[in-house]
Image 1 (spheres, one colour):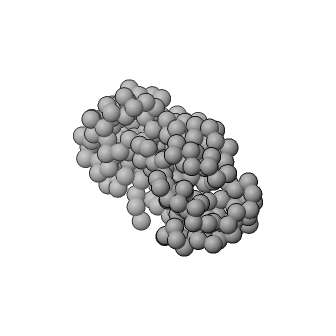
Image 2 (image 1 turned 60 degrees about the horizontal axis):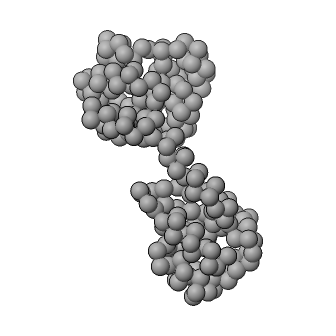
Image 3 (image 1 turned 180 degrees about the horizontal axis):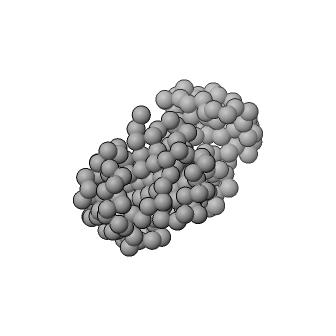
Length: 221
């Protein structure tokens, strides 16, 4: 069982706390707001009202005993800075911070955060791909220029060699999600999809550059 301390019970902090707890981890939640603490105390056993900018308050939690600490105060940057510095000084094993800009992410990394995530920026990038091409139902960047897309098929299609070749130049088909199945039928090689008949509503799972993906789709759909 891994132990987590989540600092800051905004929407992200609350959701993260719930998810970790449901995965059977040991979770402690803290926030300076009594109202926010009261909103979570009936869901998770260890929820406390604590001012994370007060070193003595943090020290009383036994910071060095937690496996991971997540600071969810992206919009309160100065407080996040002070909290991160204190956590590092108190021997935190692993600190994950949430930032709203790349500049803030860089600063938090320099002062001791082991990982900094920018969910708002990442969501915007992913959503821009989806909104820009109606055939792409979802997209998640896994690197600066590549990611995984779910491509909805507007008509039945058999995966011929030409189709595979068009996607295979710069993108890789990694599986198919059937419209009547909750789970993806993944395949490790593109060749495994040869001859597969895809129905309307099925989705291809494709890894690659979204711009190249769109250009290739224009040729076959």
